[in-house]
Image 1 (cartoon, helix red, strand yellow):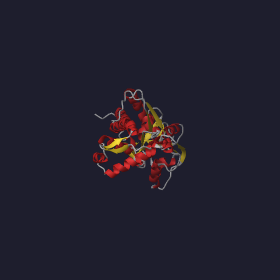
Image 2 (image 1 turned 30 degrees about the vertical axis):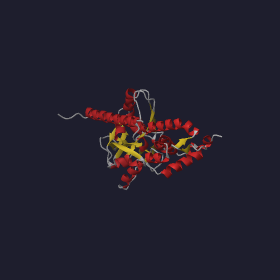
Image 3 (image 1 turned 90 degrees about the horizontal axis):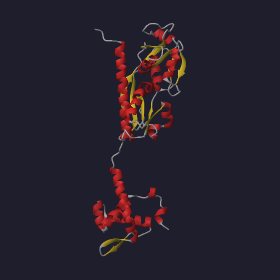
Image 4 (image 1 turned 45 degrees about the vertical axis):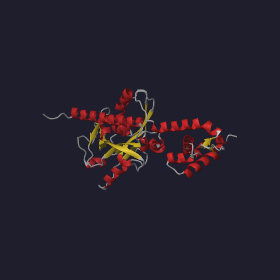
Length: 328
């Protein structure tokens, strides 16, 4: 019976083979101990464990020191090659070629970020990583799957104050909550929205995770509580785009980040109004798990997201200047 085939390699200390390799090269336990910077007894103990593992003495004393047995001579080239490959694996630099990679990258975000960033991000993939694929999942799926921790999701765009443990983040921008109503609203006609109009008009609100304790909703409700009044909530929806659509078909007022509101106002009959009550700012960040911090593919993907954010911000600034030309 070949003893080693019945051994679970997960229970084997691979350093034992490093000791054997050094003993065979040095020809003695003393010489091996010096090379390994350990005691001679540590070398002898390692050899004893290997003898038990292989069922063979491996080395025997001779006039020249320690001589290998036939079994040791047989496995010596394999051990040397294995150690060499392990060193190469440890020393190998991670490689990533954007032009040829077929890797799939997955981003988790709300539809607000997806609506704004996807056009630029898709263009970047087409030109920089033409053979790679991009997947986008919801924040609900992120939470349900624990996708950052298990490697299913590469990056998240979300609130900076909600960064999970063992994750890193990079601040992207600060957004603000604005109110939107349909064009031609029967009671809200001007460019401003009074506090009375705000509380008197039924609201369409967002709840990303299907519960009343979501971060954004809780923050907004805390602000409104200072006024001793609560808005009349007519409809709760899971996506900002659905809030925008519902607002255009009703006389309700909706609330959403300004960036999303501006994007939706380009394709829907929406009017954007500043909230009459100071709302909390929304610090948005790019989040990733620390295990991918040095991975070249993940790093390139995050850089692409940052570039897409910059392109969106530049486009947004140009659009504002076009709508509101500087006075001369």
